[in-house]
Image (cartoon, rainbow, N blue to C red; front, side):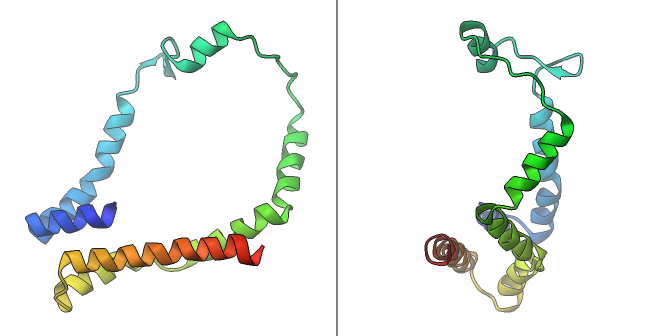
Length: 141
């Protein structure tokens, strides 16, 4: 979504305006979060589905478990191959450099690609990621 939006923004405006819009975009997210109805620093649950469900259905309450038991359950879950395999994959993937933005400007400014061609290239990259996930899930586990 971000590459497509930045492509359209670059096609319609200057690169400086597109960079400014990208820098200001997180502020819109914060403003949207700020629109949540709060009372005394806490979210109001008066009209929420959770409040409605808690009034109509009585759920059994479990006694709180000790803090060390929660941590031991967490470490036991992480020790499972179904959990640590994908976690290790994601950690290695995220540890790599993020060159998408600089490569995008190199394609557009230096190689003179059209933004639509770069968008198709990005879609092919995302499809390759999806295929990689499917191969990992069904062929390697």
